[in-house]
Length: 610
Image (cartoon, rainbow, N blue to C red):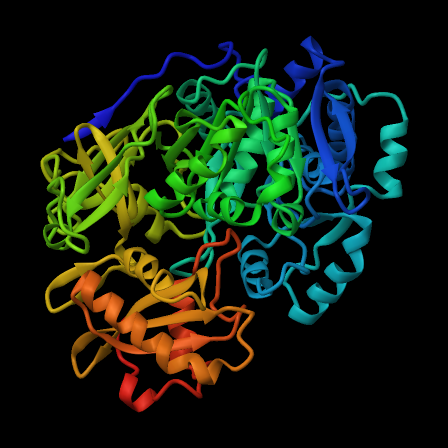
């Protein structure tokens, strides 16, 4: 069965193609509300309270025009322009300036992001941009990176906060018409986080992103006269880019941005920014809510008035029921209500947003029989014994698009209660992967076995690679197909095992656990790598006790034996740029002997497909 919900329009509509692009919406905002605040950056490196720099819609439009003029003179029209600037207003100006110049923006990050140089090099090599937009503070690092990596094309580097733009912006407004930009044109390449494979550039058109923003505005009931967007998410990530840049531009909504590091250093900063802006709408991965509940304590909670926050989206990674409960209980006295928290599902291939829980309802948590779920059937249970059920958080219903659950092998839709691959169809679905027609056809051109093939493409579906189930009309995401662990014919979801492991012993770091499978003597075997606490002075002395606790917990909770357990040093379990545990990368490191003092490669085996 399918789930569908047609949304009422979330913003003013116009038939003109010019306005149905991000460039057109920016021009309109500058024309109708020139003095309203558009973007604010809170810089916590400059002041402990966060120095605020504000751009009005007219000031932003003026700088974007100047940036577009520089890019046009550099011959960037029709080419790719990579934004490798630090988080801030320069990033916003560079991104929108590239669009106004008729270029394809490539939102990335500077080389100083720890542990992600390979992903940056891979994306730049794939996109082959004509220009790199950065900040003066990053020019030297960019030059060293490009020289060391021998990137093709010798792209020109332009500082968005440099003298060139300053001189152009100081002059009169550039009244020249922007490059011809149509809704069907590619606006930007969204490089995926690389959780299960090398980063790929998703071609997101202006029509895709405008449609997705309007779907989200309707789903979360967001309006410019009562809401603010507040975000610390990285702007190169799909959720950060759409919620902090695209949604404000299309919806003409004030956006307050800060740096991810500011949040990680002191998570209370995020909560204070929410409290300062009545009607705040924000989004974060599951780990961020758990991080706040654990780290923001005592006097830091005093005075936090969160009762006027409108929406707190939880997405981007598996949503854990205990995290939802822990966060709500931790900040209930500060005004957080269950209805504020909106579990959601999305992916870069659908621009970002697909479904969310209904407005005004608390997150819905359902317990399913664990054994049956492992066999592909979701049967709700009540009052079951611990270890016999799995709790899943509902991601609600789609808005303005369709969702099916499909048997990935037969390509036939499945009824409610059966686990299968999630397929999506709607105007927000991107048109394919950059320079990858074969993979694009496989992922974006899926057709149901029971439907006739349509050469026009309007019957095609996006294969998400995610497993899920529809229950009572709501979507529950169970995991990634590529991450599924199959032992003795039973499916195990790694995030469930990881949740069990991190609760098995106090010395295991929360959200720093990876579970994956290896083929040993033609059979799947479970391997777990878990980082230990930074407080351990002698990990070797604790290893056996932690390993026993983990093995006992996994057997009791999942009926699966642990083939090998690695107690790893802090910071060694790889993560994607969006903060997810990169299980495939962890598996490769394991087989490469990264934790050689713990890994018997002959015993572990080196078989198994990625």
